[in-house]
Amino acid sequence: WTDNKTKQTICLCPPTFYGNTCQYQNQRVNLVIKFQALSDSWQTPFIIIISLIDDSYERTIHSFQQITYLSMKHCNIKYNLYLLYSTRPKNSTRNYSIHIDIYEKLSLTYRGSLLFPIHYPFLPVHRLVHIAYIPRIVDDTTIQTCSHHHHQCIHGKCINYANNNDYHEKKSFCQCHQGWSGKHCTIPYNCTCSSQSLCLGISAANHRSICICPVNKFGPRCLIDTICQSAHEENNNSTICQNNGRCIPTDEYISFKQTFSCICPKGFS
Image: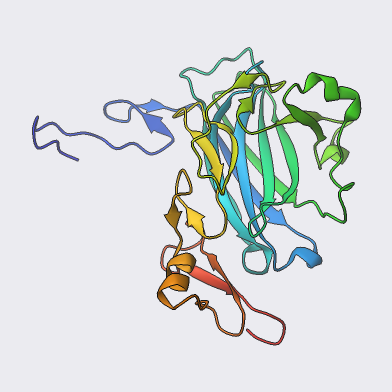
């Protein structure tokens, strides 16, 4: 790309490189992941937030990716994601992990969280391959809290990871109330997400709030109407999907051509 004022050529680098001419290799995590849900969640759309975190007192979120997942359409997709460290070079004395939060898109109900530690932090590049199982919710007791550590979560609650069976000892984290962050939820911040959305924390990459949007909104702060909401208003509050089907905006990772999909009721397709 050429700057018209200075007549200088400016390189737009892919995530794997940086520098004036993209000559330096970024320290990064390349995550290839496939999600699976049980049959009772086959038609439930999920918002999945995949974060690169460390074990510091701030529990820094270095970078994140957010996807919309619908098992009936996306069960065979392998997501190929890049997560970058917020500093160059990264702090090799810290331990890093992939932290995944899962919410139901229609109700913003919390389903659970998964943890995948990153071993050998001295390596500049990691490539991880995982299959992630979306937790099932039967009642309020399905999400396991860790009351014996509750006193450590000052402005939040202690949650056990849903994939604890993968580890020798149970791993947990503090799920902070909105406006608080850090390992023990003691660091305040100003949430800039819209009032209808959820605020998950602050990204160290751009110092902006991480917003989880309701089904009718999108954008960094959940302020823009989706194609489903716009069509709903243009058609005098009638849905874009027929026979009481539910309109779900299509995730950008899946398709650029199709802007929405319909979850059909039983007997229709």
